[in-house]
Length: 117
Length: 113
Image (cartoon, rainbow over all chains, first blue to last red; front, side):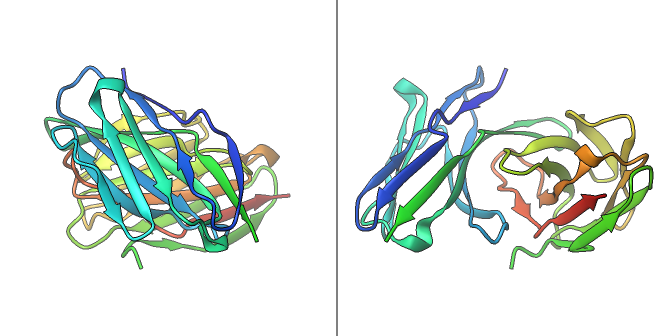
């Protein structure tokens, strides 16, 4: 069965500090996809990144970086030099595809990040 | 802009009433998902449709029902509303394959008084 665990419920950091949000997943499949979403205080959910199970290269996008490690079933998200605008709830998600257009998506419970000025 | 349209944005109604939430998916997306997010809670998966057919059910109450129409828009019907049904209801759409990210609408905030 699919499972996504975000053990950190809330994190507070001071502006300009680096912060890592943890995501650990469970799946029996060899082909799957991992996502991160951001939900700012305004409420909308924004897609940030997708990673497939065969690509373990880390990815960097500006101040954001993602570390995918299959050996530990983790897909962690690091924000470098955090800013107040990074304050949001961040969700990690696992997606698997089944025949007939059935895509099963499991979300973690989210990590609330507060960046203090 | 995700391309997913949800209406209405806000809904205030009384206990015992029935409401309908509407979702128009992104152009080209065949799959629609409904999620419920109560205050300071995570995303609770309710139901998923693909090309008009129900594909998966989550923790959806019997008082709730949904459907996806031939033009692919979807409606979530909530009946016999209770105070605890007050929440943010999100619709998301995707192409439907495993590598497709979900694109979320801005949600409908339902308040039951």
